[in-house]
Structure formats: structure tokens, C-alpha cells
Image 1: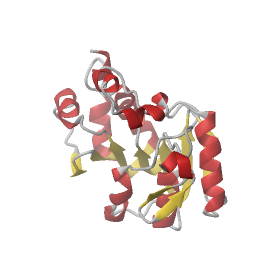
Image 2: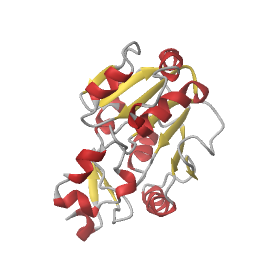
Image 3: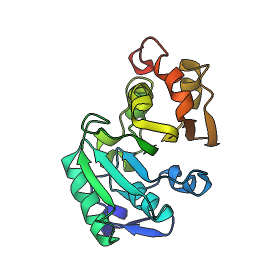
Image 4: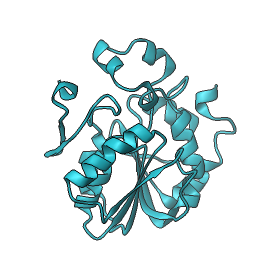
Length: 212
């Protein structure tokens, strides 16, 4: 229905959507109100439609937001939504494979990366098969992109910064792979990790969970 109408709502805001992006439904939208830092630089990794970048810009009106995605098609949709919400002066769109084209450290990093495991991809309900697979498939255990984010996070988070990441139903798999990391779970599908904890996570496990 969202694709037919070219519109979806998240946390009270309307966004343009089409089959270049997944339909906005991230639980991170409902975690932002509990963030206890006052970020000035925010990064939204795997931004898709741009919904989280826009919600973050509205939640933190003094912040500037970088929104990155590897998909040029998704960035076109995000640009349309940024214009729709008149946030072009505060949101910068960047084509990047995760952190590859980014340099500056951030106070807050948000990410709703691809996290559907390979077995689950084969069993997706029919309606999800209309969405771009690149935005869903997260490797064998669904943790390929999460592992890369955790590995790089210490270089891109300022001291006192915070990482917020959605991983769907992969909480047990993540905690098995990183048993000493100390993730906090404001929602079952979303973890937060302070910058001071990311260094330990970046060193473990010796092999990426999704490659096992």
C-alpha cells in the first residue's frame, strides 16, 4: 500500500517511498527521545528514505546530520524527503559504503543496516519481497554489516558519543559473538553502545560473525 500511495508515515511524519527504498518502520525512531546527549554532529548510516536522518534533525535542532547510503537510488529518494521537510541546510547526503567516504567523528551514529539472515531471506513474507534486497540481506547470521560498523565505530565516534543500531531478531547472535561488550537494549531490536565501549567490540570476535 505504501508503494502504491508513494507515502509512509513514521513517528508522525510522512515520507515519500517507492521501490528504491524499504518502507520506514525503524524502531530507532522511538529511541531518539531517550538520548541523553546533545549531539552537534550526527551520522545516519544506511539512510534509505532518509527518515531517520530527518527525525534526528528534528529531535536535535542544533545538530548537523550526514546521511549515507551505498545506493544512489536510495539517496535520490532521501533527497526528495529532505526537500519535503525543508532540512537541506542541515542534512548532507553522501554516497558511501558504510564509513568509507566519511571522515569526521560524530557525537551520535544511527544505523538501521541490512540485518536479515540468509535463511530468513529465503522465508520472507511476500510483501517484503517487493523491497530492495540490498537493504535487507545481512549475511549468513544477519550480522555482516553490524560487525563492520562495530569494527569501525571507535574511529568515527567522539569521546562521550553514542552508537544506536537496529538488528531485528539477532540479539542472541550478537551477544554470543560479542559476549564482553555490554550492549544496552532500549528495545529488543535496538542496541545502544557508548563510544567508550566500542573499542572493545572492535577487537572481537577475531572473525566476523556473518562469515561463520
